[in-house]
Length: 268
Length: 179
Image (tube, each protein chain N blue to C red):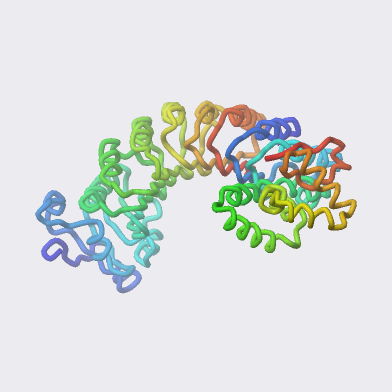
């Protein structure tokens, strides 16, 4: 770790809220990621301290512990920034940047650090906090495939494209729980999800996702992989709600795997 | 959710093979006519009469869960489904002497719940009442109350299986043999 980072005051955090140290990367990300350095996600998490250090991994993107004081302070300062939360067996790091492109850069760096040491990763949660983001599908696939011990993968509030759904299908195996939570799934990605479910692959849990459930119904027929489905309908559009309920109800007769089903109405 | 859709959803879950927990949240407007409420609960009863896996219906709201028909008819079916895997597990226990001990402990735990007690007993008739001469003699010499006699007749008619003690007076339909 020595020689990689040094203190800085890029945002003057110490003056703003006191004792929020900042670090900046003194070498290129290429050097940081080199196998010779053997710097990993766990090292980064340890370096960020118990709760209050921000580290700039790229000129425009930094990381903080997601559950620390630095995160809450910076969240206030940068409320309009893009952020993605990694949670690896409970070790949570938020990557933050001003735009989705800049966030993609830093997410790429963190993902590669993660890949360097994933043999014992059991739970991976990716939560996008403020807006939509499209991962690079190849990196995503590589990341998840490298996690040989992975038991639970959660994508929270992340919009991914059809290629990602195919990746989710391809990595599906017994013993790997895949949860999609609060995800917006429309158009081609929704069709891809239905296609994946039709092959008994993909998510085991769909939790409050924004999707046309009359489309999803096609994926439920004959499916035995999806174990949990939570759908909350907006009560403001009665006709759509009825159509979606009827669509799902029709499909449930042919479903073979659901264990937990929630129908709920939200006030709208 | 409209009444029609409610019935369709209940109907579609009748034969679902794996569903265990069903949560229905804010499924109606604030004012629900009593007749409509009863009709909706009846749809749940009809669903549970056939479904073999659902063991919990949650977040329904008090007007459903406190309805007499729900308490007397839906809940026994839910409990039956919840207990069924345990009955199967006891049935598979070997050797028979060990199975008898497991059944004994289960019966002890269920002694205050007539439905659960009877389900465990009727699902393990050959262990509870082994076909030996001595046991038969002892059983014959026991005074049989009309209630106990009725239970035995029901079990025999069901081939030694269990039907929950639901309130059939409000359902107006014959109970379905289960297991």
